[in-house]
Structure formats: C-alpha cells, structure tokens
Image (cartoon, rainbow, N blue to C red):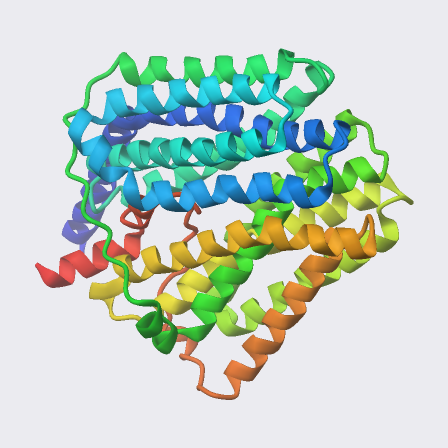
Length: 432
C-alpha cells in the first residue's frame, strides 16, 4: 500500500519537473507569439475602423477581411516547404518583418484593392508565424506535457488578442501612430526567438481526409466548423464596424472587443467540460441557439445600456468561440484515433473557408438591413446550423457520454496545432 503511494508521488514529482523543463524550452516562442499577436489583434480592429472612417462601404471592408482569411488558409497549408528550407528562426524573422512592412503600408495607403492584396499577404505571413511557433512547441513537448503546453499557448493567444484592443485608446485611428505601433510590435517579436536556438523540427506533410469522407463520418463536425468560421470571420472583421455605426467611441469599442475575446477565452473550457457530462450534441445545439439569442438581444440593447451590452458581448464570445472546438471534439468521438490529426486538419480547412466567406456575405446583410446586419447574419447562421443539428440528431443515435473522448480546446491557426491535441498522443501510443 505504502509502495503504491510512493510510486504515485514520484510520478507526480517527475511530471512536475518535466513540465517545468518543457515550459522553459517554450518561453521564447510564447513571448514572441504574445508580441506578434498583439500587433495583429490591434491591427485587425484598427483597419476596420480606419476604413469605415474613410467612408469605405461595408462590402469592401468585408472583402478586405475575407482576403486575410483566404491568405491564412493558403498559408496554413503551403508555408511548410519554405520554413523547412530556411529554418524556423529565419522563417519567423521573414514573416514578422514582412508583417511589419504590411502594417505600415496599409497605414499609408487608402486604396481598397491595394489593402485587399496586402491583407491577403498579411494572412499568409501570420499563417507562417503560427506554423513556426506551433511546430516549435510540438518539438519541445512530450506526450505527457503536450496538453499542458497547448493550454498555455491558447491562454497566451487569447490574452494577447484581448489586451491589444486597449492600445486603440493611445491615439486616433486617422493618423499613422497606431499602425507604427503594430509594426514596432511585429519587429520586436523577432527578438525572443532570435536570441535562442532550436534544431529545426521536421514538419509533417498535412494529410487531410477528403471532405466527402469527413462529412460522411461526421456531418455535424464539418458543418459546425464551417458555421463557426462564418460567424467568427464576420465577428472579428465587422464587429468594430457595428459598434462604430452605433456611435460608440474608440475607447468603448476597445473595451467591447476585449470583452468579446475574453469571453471566448474564459467560457470555452467550462462549456466544453459541460459537454463531457451531458453530451456534445446537446451542447452544440444549445450554443448555436444561444449565439443567435445573444445577437438578437444585442439588437435590442446595443444602444440602451453599455453594461448590458458588455455582458451580452461577453456571452456572445463565449458561445461563438466554442463552436469550432466543440464541433472538432464531437467529430473526434466518431473518428478512428489513427485518423484524428488528418481529420482535424480537414475541419480546420472547413473553418478557414467559412472564415473567408463570412466577412464577404455579412456586409450584404448590412447593405440590405442597415446597422444591425451583422447580428442578423449571425442569427441566420445560428438558426440554420441549429436546425441542421436537430435534423441530424434524428438520423443517428448520439454516442453515450461515457464513450466520448475528453473535450480539448484547439486554436484556429494552422494544421500543426492539431498535432498538439492530446487525442493525437493517444493515437500514437496505440500505434506503437
């Protein structure tokens, strides 16, 4: 009996030592991630506000934002060859420096078509940056520490995006200062990774399952990821425009966007854990309905009470941001463990396509219905997705809760992030 306690204590101590050692190895890339994500998070909101103040119609603002997500999708699946050829540190320096130049160029140029092209290039650069960081974390993690490192990575990513919104209060959006801050942050992000060393890890070729096979295995997973992309692509791109059209000051917009992202960060895990106990299909239906309900309430309270709006925005972020990882977790309950990495890469592609289309289609709602077009777009997507989920629940019996895999929150960044998924570790262990 005492021997078992001693063995258990030794295992706990060993895991703690291994985790501390692993975290020391990933401090540099995490710091670089935080700095460059702050630059990109600030720029995403800043560019929308700047284009709006220059009188650019919502449809063109959506096209500029859609170009960014298109660049992210292409870059996520095409940058590996370049990174493998030049090495991780030099690739990061190239992508971050190019991002800094793009931020400044977009601050200097007001032409919509040029901004669209530059934003597309910026999406490719950010995809390359995410691949470098995530493959670095993957190389420095073990099967025991991978899940914890993924949690640290997710927290750093969301916290940087949310905190960056407050930098909007430093200056007006009409002048170049905020664009210079974005460029400075992108340039500074090179320093932590440049001052360390990593032997370049081998990047595995992305191996997505065909959409036909993926959809046949889990229609709800594919549609859920696509719908999550539709809504989040539109929300990230056009929510600052929505608040600006309601005549909120830049400082208030910064607070609301920060609250939106913090809601997405803080509610994902509790909602995900709830799905481990009551079933993922029920939670998926609930969060899509609640996302639509939050948007409906925003239409009524957006101009009445700032405190109420903050609460609604927080809940909207919590529910909308959960749809993608929840859909992946649902799909993984049906997918053979050996195919999990390939399947999640395919689901990421479904999300990326949705995120590209969302900012392009949502402005059509704004054009037809006016200021409240964005929440109306999210309501339509939520209702249609909920109906599809309800219909699918009549076609196949849900997996018993006790047979579900544990919920895992995944970033919507690059295929490499999916290899940090602890469910992939289990598959590896079974294959060995």
